[in-house]
Structure formats: structure tokens, C-alpha cells
Length: 289
Image 1 (cartoon, rainbow, N blue to C red):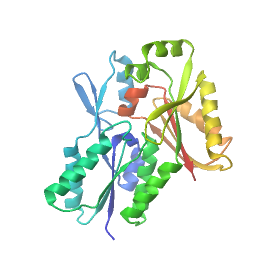
Image 2: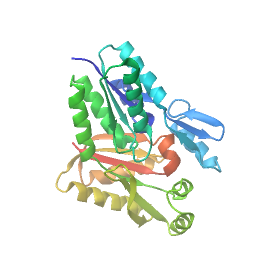
Image 3: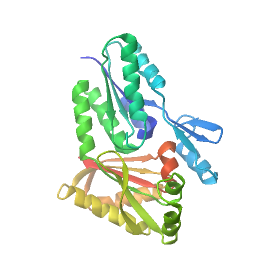
């Protein structure tokens, strides 16, 4: 059976220890403050990014990896591991053109070589560790020796079972990025409104609810998870924070009062997603154990 290589873009926010343990290959995206450009997770850490973000008057810009860069990634694995299958998992097509860039790269390489290639490109329909959990699951299955086709099927199924909520601490970055109007951001800030966001079946961010104050927003998000999973109490959970480790621990403590938590992952929201949600954000992803 051929080896299966797992590729993902850097917005998966998979902890470094997991990347090393499972041999996951990350293709970095870029974030730029004016003329300064950085490869996410390589040339700038999450902590350094948020420090720069809070000091910058203008919102940084982000850029996806080009199709030609993915061509080189796929070509390298084909040369280094002859006969390998490649599974490439990416940020939601509802938020970025990264998935389309990877698909185009596969087409370009097939046209160049004149043959169909064993490359499976998957649209995660999610962001940050919401698809990072799919990436890690794929890598674990690959390590167990499953075929690429079976891994892809399980990865897509896992995405359908995943539930998630984002708690945004400030409306400033949603407003700067054009997600909400300036007037709504000002009123929301004055009233201490905390939006609760999620991602729909098309991989697009939408507002689920809102609460006045952080504690009420956390309590409401947990109520939503209780509604989502009903009597199913055995769950895995990942909490991704934007320089908000205290919020992570608070959320996990409250979740443990209602569910039996099995795998628990703590990670940081990286620069690309962080550009649009800002510091203080919590993203919570839950899936059946």
C-alpha cells in the first residue's frame, strides 16, 4: 500500500507537537503590515502578530498561497516518495480561494505530466482548528495504514459531525475587515455586545446569537453545544484563542461540568484568521469522542 502524505495550509492552526508527531506538511500563508510581509507560523508567531496588530493603525493584509507554490509542494512529494498518495486539506472555500488554488495546482501538474495524479484536495468548509482536527485525523489514519480514499471519506464525515462557535471579544476587526458596518460596531461596543459566530454548511461565517458581556456569551455558547449534542456526553474539544489563555481554561472548566471530555486540544488562532477576528477571540470546536 502506498504512503499517504497529508498537506494543509497554515490556517489549520495545528499545534507544532502534533505536526511533528504525525509528519503533517504545512504550506504557509502570508500576512503583511504595510511593506513588511511574514510567512504565518514561520516568520511570525501568533504572539508577535497580535502584539503588532494592537499597535497598528491599519488592518494587515493576508494572501493565500498561489497555485504554482502548491504545484512545487506536490511535485516534491511525488519525487521524494514515489507512488505516494497526497491528501491536501484547506481553509473553507467560503472564506478564501486557497482550496481553489490547490485544485488548480493539481490540474496544472496533471496537464504538465500528462497523467491523472493521486492527489485528493478537500474543502474543509471551516477555519483554524475546525479543519485542523480533520488534518490531524487524516494523519492518524494515514499512520494506521488506511488508503487515501478511505481517509478522505472519514475526513469529510468528521467535518459533518463537528460543531463550533467563535466568541469575538471586540467588533473592531470585523468592522475594519468589512464584515459589519461602522455604526453597528460602535453601538455594539458601547453596549458591550459579544457576537457568537459559527460557520454554515457552505463554509461561510454567520452570526448565531449575541450576548451582553463575556460571561453571558460563554454561557450561551455552552447552551448551544448542549442543544447540538443532546444526550451525547462523550466529546472531544479544541479551544483556539487569540492571546486569551485564561478564556480557554474558563471555557474548558465550564464544558467539563456538562460533558465528559476526552481529547482536549489547546492552540492559538494564527495571523491570517486573527487579522479578521482580533485579539481576545475564542474559537471552540467540538466533535464526538
